Image 1 (cartoon, each protein chain N blue to C red):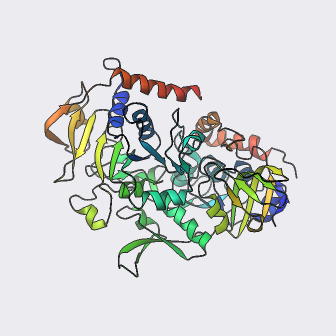
Image 2: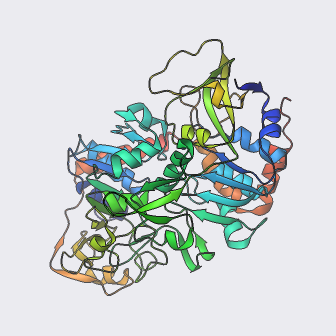
Image 3: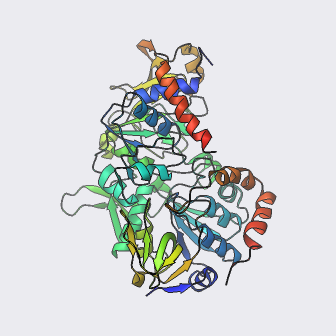
Length: 255
Length: 272
């Protein structure tokens, strides 16, 4: 806890600030969903939330507990089938931002949510798998990833490429024929990394208040690039913290 | 016209050892009661198909019903991992589990091709990921008009699809609404289908956003009130989130899991 807020709260607030009002956001469950709903509750009331369960324009008054929570269907502009959400809404590039989490992430923003360690047939840890993420990462105009930063997560090479970031570097997305822009921003509990337009490498551009470069480096499994104009982020405002805590209280009240 | 049957008879008639079985549902309308009946009847060597295998598939896998899983995301939604699924993949317990892994878009399009009577579906997807290296059922195809390389996935045609819905009439016409996922496609893609419903009514009142499965595409309908519990049925029940959270602890340990299955599934009397 720093100055009355936690590192997770700072991360969620910083992630919410990435979302612009009036845009359409394809939301993953967990941290992305919390941040997207916080954005809607604060600076982006007209943010269009799209969930892969088929809910378009969901406006939940509490945090959904899963991607298929009934509150999403009850408050959506439309509820469509799963083939429709992927084929008509995601694939043609109608969604501005894909908002994803990750189990592992590398310097080029490639994401693993499939297996850790060992080989694919005999992994050390079996993770849930791809879900909607490969096509979200491929087709949205840009991708924002929100994930807690540690050496376990921020790894030199992901054990499995579930969703493509910038592949093996500059030009890879174009060679693969991916139409969306890729992972522009990664928000963590330590700071913000942005893809360098020239090298495609995730570069530390902002630290949350009280975090040092040494801490960020220690939590990254590759020699992370640091921007010359490295900045310190703005702490959560009272409005943001109140809204976030009110949202999180809605989850506790459904328990 | 669909036959109105008991759950036990519906499963006995339609689900056979070695079948490819899809019990679909996207958080909402998950056919838990039908899954439990499959466990009670001791089906073996099933290829289980579903976009989002969750707790009912964890139970089927842990009970030894499955040989193979075709899926795109396996987890306990909003809670964490599926421990029986993990144990089967990492330790082959109680039997080895073969995986065929896709993305949601891939699975959805496989059902669409199955429902459409086509051999495959075409999509943009998977490009650059490691999934095609491990799944033979992801290939590429050149567009005959533009020459562009696209992804092809084969039609998915389950032997039997099981879904849960809000209600049916006496002729077996089924109505479902709310988040209806890929259920219509999964029923239309299958050779046989069983639908469990909250209630059977004389007259189906139209509902906004409803999906209708006419009785002539459904083999059997069974009245099973609460048949989606712990998932939910829009306008009939809410999701039992405590159950999903409690499942994490139950499923971590093999013995605790087996005791749970004995007590809450195998020893349960169901009306014939």
